[in-house]
Image 1 (cartoon, rainbow, N blue to C red):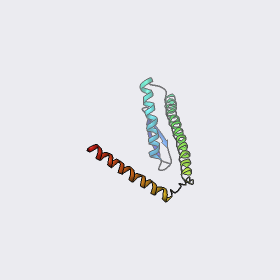
Image 2 (image 1 turned 135 degrees about the horizontal axis):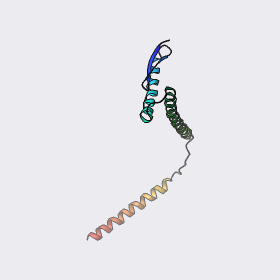
Image 3 (image 1 turned 180 degrees about the vertical axis):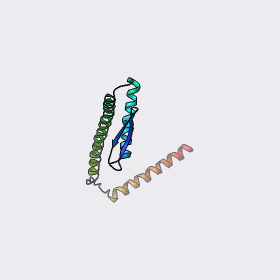
Image 4 (image 1 turned 60 degrees about the vertical axis):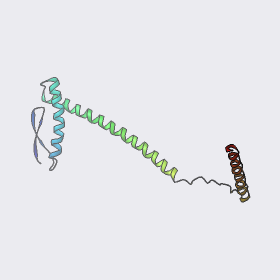
Length: 131
């Protein structure tokens, strides 16, 4: 097992880890050190155990907050997935059938005749108005 020296709050600790996990240990130690440094700036010197406990609690608080945010986002995604599924199901439904009656030919012929007469009357009115 590799031995890794980490620094937290200005103090060096020798810690063992699994082979290949050194990078993760260094990363975790860096986060803990940032919390410890913040504590030391606010409070000043404190016993090692208390510093590690407080820094760990501060880090755990941040982690809990992030987990809450993740849970909220997951809930929103689940709602959107359900809505999307509903829309997909609605899109797959049979379209409503609409029947349009066919206009008989004699009616369209009559309408065309009326339109022709109306155009003729309009033309006569334009001639009389212009004269």
